[in-house]
Structure formats: C-alpha cells, structure tokens
Length: 228
Length: 216
Image (tube, rainbow over all chains, first blue to last red; front, top):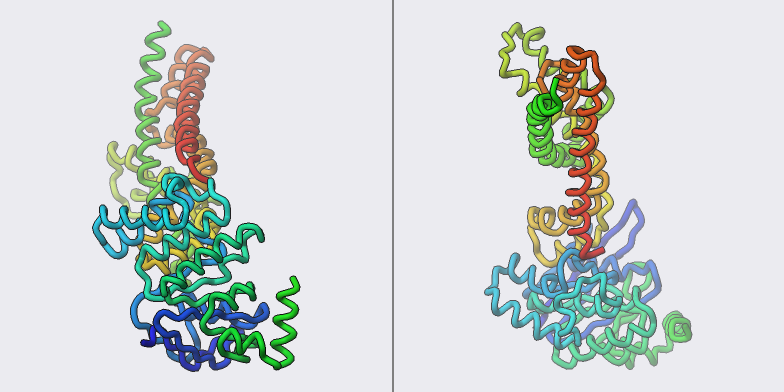
C-alpha cells in the first residue's frame, strides 16, 4: 500500500531551482533513506513533504498522518519531557488524558527515558532530547515518520543511541523517510536509498544496488562521506 | 504639621498613584500585544499605522500627550470637560503611551523566537492560536521580563506626571504641602514613597523572573 506519493515536485528560491521534478513513493512499512551532498535539495524535499514549505508545482498525496523529527529537536523548552510528548495528542487530537499519559510514559520507557519524564529539555543531553522528540512524534500515531538529519546536531558518541532507536522502529515496521549523512546506517536500515544531487534523483535502489554502483559520482560520494 | 498627618495626606495621594499604575499596566500590556501584531502584520497598511503610532508615542513627551488627551475634546470639539474626565484622561494617556513601548518589547521578544518552535508546532498540528498563546508567548514573556521590569519601574515614577492635568496623586499633594509649609520634608517623604513602591515592584518582578527560571 502506498503511504506517500510525490509527483514531479518543483521548488525554487529566488529563481534558483532547488527541486527539479522529483517523484518518490513510499510503501507501508518501508524505510527510505535519502542521501546526497549538501545543497542537493534533500531537506527541501522533506520540508515540502511535511508542509513546512510550499512546492511551486507537483503533487503530494498521503494516506494517513505524518510526523517529523527535526535536526535540532525543536522541543518546547517550557514544557517538561512528559508534557512535550502529551501536549499535542491532548490539545490537537483531543484524546483521553489517562490514555495519552499512559502511552507517553510507555514511549519514554521505550526510549530509555522513563526517569526523565519530569525533567525539562535543557537538563537533557542532545541525544536524550532527540529521543524525546522521537517520542513526541510517535505519540501522535503517525503512519509515516520523517527524519531530517536526526544525528547531525549531535556529538559522534551520541549518534549511536539515535540510530539504534531508528533501527528498533524499523524492526517494528514503522514507515520512515530519513535524510541522513550516515552511510553505514542508511545501508543497514533502509529498504530503499535515493541519492539526490542538484535537485534531482541521481540514483534510486536498494542499499546493495547503491553501494555496489559503478557510477563514478556515487562511488566518489560514498567514498568521501564514509572516510570522514 | 504632624508627621503622621503628612504621611496620611501623602498616602491618600498614593492611592491615586497606585490606581494609575495598576490600571495602566492592566490595560497597556494587552494593548501593547495587539499593537505589536499590527507592527508585524503582513498587511502593509496596518504595519505602517502601528509604526507611525509607536513613533509618535515614543517621540513626544508623555506630559504633552496627557494634556492633548485631557484638553483635546474641548479644543477640538468644544466638549465640556467634566471633573471625572480628569482621571479617565490620565489613564487613557498613560495606556496609549505605555502600550507603544510594550509593543516594541513584545516585537523584539517575538522576533527573537527560533523558527523551529513554530515549525514543530505546525507539524504537530497546533492551530495558529494555540501555537502563539501556548508555545510562543510563554517563552516570549520569559525573554522580555527584564525589559518589562524597566518600563514598570519607570511607570511608577511617571505617575507623578498626572499632576499636569490636576489629578491629586501623591506628587501633587507633596507639592502643595511643601509650598504651604515652605519645607522640603514633604518632597523627601514623597521620594521615600516612590522608592519603597519601586522596591516592591522590583521584588515582585524578580520573583516572577525566578519563577520562570525553571527552564532555559
């Protein structure tokens, strides 16, 4: 079943074309990783898909709800960890308070943060904040979850904990679209990888197809990024 | 004159000063927010209007503004000025002046908020109203509290300007007593009143800042 279908997406800023006719589909249970150099339009694609930017033309069709995990977490600093997770399900979805709280605590436990429910974001490490933001997104019961470079704002030693959380979600058949620079991670977790450059999809395929590609540009990119 | 009589008279004036102070705050803080919305509006006309308004309010003396509000109805429209209007005019004058200052403080605070807070709220499905009043404004208040404290302390002292349109607030009374007794004592006593008033204000504002210090 298709959860997301993007057709011929175009977007430009000040006459500069950033997306040049992009089409992707995401099937239920699929993990799609989007890789590519800075300025290739990966983040813009995600921002258009999640409604944070309006595309100039093209179609975006969803089945169900989506959630987004930001690079910089964007937690609400004046809310406790628990309130960050509970607030939108309560205020936006108007769900039952006891249910929401119970589920939020379970999500925090799953993220290894059960003892942080009453802490405030500023008291947490970056990795912990990112896990809270994943819990916050999951609490809304998204059918598809987007990640915008979820480890780019973290110290290298903290990226592992986030990647593990995402892997666990993949094992539970969560549908995800992940923009990332972590090549090995993309290779391990993704069902499909899209290599983007200059606003177009250069190559799309399974991790094996991408990582064994003979196309020079992709060999160069993977070699360069992996050596970092 | 006995000291306690002096203090009693000043205290009566103090009631007016406090009334001007409280009414001005209660009315100008929300009005300032509305004006800051105008100042940040996407509609050019509203933005220009708010800009001109703020510019005039900040660019001319409060004393003059009070006189315009008080005498304006008579000079412009020939309306008879009732005695009750004295106090109302004072409140109007103070409110429209302070709202302009507060508007700029709000604007500074709102514009300093990271875009990510709006984006997170949007993706989670909060309405624009919820986003502003639940996510943005509480954080803005924390950021602008020190600037608000400055204005509030200035307001305590500015209440003395009501004397120009004959409101018998504390300063007016101190002036009368001083003239009658040819003594500095009433002025010194009035100064003490203002000072203590402001100490209390500073204490309350400091408490509020501490209360919001639970996050950074």
